[in-house]
Image 1 (cartoon, rainbow, N blue to C red):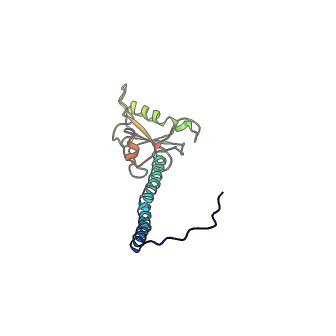
Image 2 (tube, rainbow, N blue to C red; image 1 turned 90 degrees about the horizontal axis):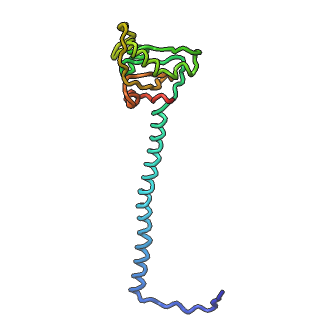
Length: 172
């Protein structure tokens, strides 16, 4: 390592060069402050947007699928509508099995489909119907949603029906 004991005397700059150097230095220092403010916006905005989007995605994922928690009954609807409280178009079913068992409503779609096939359920009917003898009826597309009380609700419709009703799809 070299050691320098004697430094040369500083050289003096002409006044116009000193003024130009000082102006240049002030411009650089001044632009860094505005650059920081400019950088702050583009950095904060994407971070905030990312947080909002990830929260929304998590909410949608939670609301899109939800397990059935009330396994004692299920509801077969004849219209893609929730109705008013306990008054709804359709019927409540309690499939055979031990009360409260998972097997009791795991096949809610199948039980509701059987009721449609037998003619006991018909589109827009408010309750169970008297079936015509010796006929097999067409079964509409059915979808299982989780109602607000945790019960399975089986509606006529497609994969978008639960979302249109503001309900999560019943997870299987």
